[in-house]
Length: 316
Image: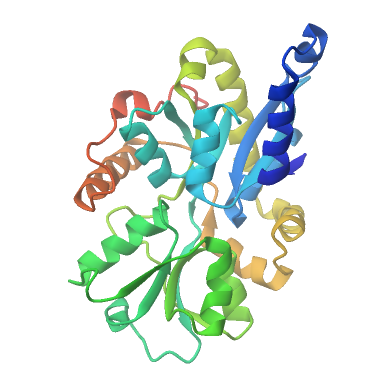
């Protein structure tokens, strides 16, 4: 079931205003699991949770435009689980919000895109140019890493805050010279002849880390069996999405949800991984990531990684 953010919040407000809800109605909703997902290609895996749901469980998926929106919905209790970037998760946990990462939700799915006619060959060639990024996203951290690697500061470029869904059109109109975006926008731009991939930004110290699967800390503490069941479903859906035989069905759902044409998705899917495991290398990169967010003054302290990232629910 797909619910957009506006209709979901309106429905939630109506339930709150109604006050007392009959116990029988609350019981009927007990197995409805609300999950937030980003409006990006790799997050579409959430639409397939129902395939692998525990008996009696119904997944309701709410689509959010930005990582902070997804994180805020989790913290507020509007959803119990969410797919959003590590940056948003780290920001929330560092501020004491009850965010716990319980699985990875895939990697890569990023690209630095420039106009098709741009003479730029390397990231250093973007000095003095307008570069769009999504605030509070993994891509923002990656952008700052790329700038640091190329001895560039905020005075060397013009940083433009944009949502992922607006980047492709902004580049086409000439409003920006480049963007650090999320699939499928980079592939859409390229196949439309309006953009070209300057680079896939996986050579920074944060590597291919992108989105995470998170829940609230109170659920981890008080309802571990519930969390374990949902993580099991998430991991099964991720494993399924990564199989070549699932491509046609996955792309059809992505087109329905995001409007991306099949040729663009064929290209985008080559730039997406569906890893759900959090291993020692992932943890090391996540901790480095947090330190960079401090350096960028996005957070004032790193979260407690012993509780912020909990791998105990992952399949053994």
